[in-house]
Length: 84
Image (cartoon, rainbow, N blue to C red; front, top):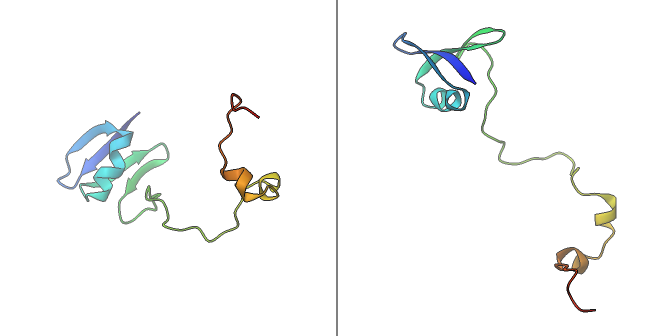
């Protein structure tokens, strides 16, 4: 997907969507075009592509069945070809 951007020198360009975040981080663009209209950097809200360093909410990835297994079973690799 290509995104319209306006650089700080007022030059217009069309760049791949994957490049827009890098241009914003390097402070090279002053605005870009979303489907809802132009977004001015430093004025309009934009999503950060930088993931948070830590998460303090509840753990939701671990299932109850995994929580009830003994730790040695969780860390032991299983192979169907292993002899019993």
